[in-house]
Length: 282
Figure: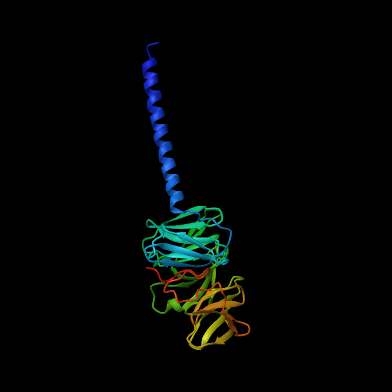
């Protein structure tokens, strides 16, 4: 059998390659696990805060916490409105992770990113750039680009709320809606706003307090008068979180405010509230 030695040599080489690949996968898997120790939870996130030299910590509604040491404290991170999905930057890439099952989606390079937002359920992600916005659906993998939309106030599976004309003066105060087919509508001249979980209302800052507007027409629904109020996020369909001694919940129907034990008891300079996104990047 003159070809026995060549066959044995080829088999040995093949086994070495397979062994090397297996070792690489093992190291990669172990590294991935090391990056996310005990980071799966069915509990919703109440807020996230970066800790100096310790990465990010996610505070759960129950009072528990998850440490994400791999994400540096100066890297952006946002939380979906339902508290189950995070979008963050790691190693120069924008990624989304479902904290219930650990699924990670790579959304591309983080260069020149100016904002991150998610739909309430975390299924749709908006990654804003100076001249466009990338939209990604995590369930289907579908992606599309909205040119000229650079500031996002909210999104769902069917509609995006954003400001057009990113580089044209004055255009950032115009809010429009855009649908998957490219059609849209003018909502109003609103300098900001956060979409409510039921997608009916927008909450924004006003000189006299908290301005609540209709998310379709832009019409004023209510003005909750408060001094120096800054809207940070929605907490259900009828309350918003505002920055006040240091954080309070304000009922948009009655104007009454209350404290919640799950809110931070001290001021945090940079905080990730579910549903608030981040437009301060870039």
